[in-house]
Image (cartoon, rainbow over all chains, first blue to last red; front, side):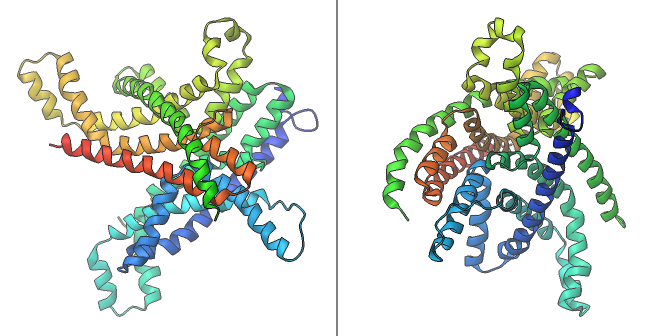
Amino acid sequence: MELLSFGDTGWGDELLIATLMTIAVSVTAMLVGFLFALIFTPLKLSKNKFFNFIANSYTTIIRGVPELLVIYLFFFGGTGAVMFVASIFGYNEYIEINAFITGAFAIGIISGAYSTEVFRGAIQSIDKGQFEAVKVLGLSKFQQFFKIILPQTLRLAIPNLSNVWQITLKDTSLISVTGLVEIMRQSYIAAGSTRDPLFFYSFAAVLYLLLTFLSMKLINRLEVRYSKGY
Amino acid sequence: MDIELMINSLPKLLGATVITLKLLSASLIVGLIIGLLFAILRLNKNIIVNRFAYGYSYVFRGTPLLVQIFIIYFGLGQIEYLRSTFLWVVLKEPYWCAIIAFALNTGAYTSEILRSAFQTIKPGIVEAGKSLGIPNKIIFYKIQIPIAIRQSLPAYGNEIILMMKGTSLASTVTLMDLTGVAKYIISTTFKPIEVFIVAGSIYLFMTFCIHNLIKFLEKKYSF
């Protein structure tokens, strides 16, 4: 137990900070994912074949290729791209871009592909009459979307989005390969310096279980809130 | 775009694909057996057995695969007792550790898929079997299991694709699977985009094949 104490001798405080880092990366990645979903869901539902093609390629490629490969692409590719731009301006030293940004972006793109599918499914399962009704009532485009369509979409999407959240949360463990100190990376460091991998990786597993458990409780509340009136 | 690199790296990546496919098939076979076993335990009325099976699937579905593989590969070797048993022959090889971790992981998901499939079987079907005088065992093996497998095909197809992507984590325990080799080529040539396109295409091709295989099976066994 002294391994988990706070201060210089134990790893308690380090692991706590690492847990907060995992939460921060997951939330950022999820928001980045929503941003992507916001762009690609309309493209997917559009009648334009070309837009459909773009959105379908995005979701198919991302969901068919391992997360780790995508992370490597961004980790190595991101640094390369920044260094290339810098070399144009005559700066040839090695530049390392922030692991948090790379990681959150890479996981965000993955999570966005899943969110896009969830939102597409939710919007498609809204009754056609609703779309016709908002038009008949003469509501503005803004009102149509934010007051009528979005609340209904959310109600249908939340259960599936909670799955996306779980996937995203677990995927952030892969960012540890880029050196970002989240739960996995911190356990790796602690395991290396204390030679007690079994304890630290098991503890990491407990932390992840705790995170998934608590977030499920939270999401269940949201679900109840958004199903009001049904 | 470095087309030459793409062509040169293709044979290496295809060679690594063999390892990916070996890992995938081994863990799917073991995982299916584990999944079926735990699905049956989940349907057991005994609360301890039931809780045990639920706990297993909860833990393995609630933690990242990376943690599981690290616990098995780095963690278990720490136990002195294990080092003296025959298990050590298996546990010191990253290849077997990866398969154990993948099989336990996919087993947890498979058990959930099969459990829900068992639960959606209409009671009338079982009752019909009973009224025909078919023994309970035969009803289970010849009626319930085939129906459950058919019901769970779409979800299981997704699970196969997820597992295929999961095998990429084998590269974190020094195995040179498709992702491992891709990472090696990227880190020696610093051409991530080219390598990503080739390796990604191989993965996509496998996804495509699995997807169509499942579709074919669904059609074949539809009723």
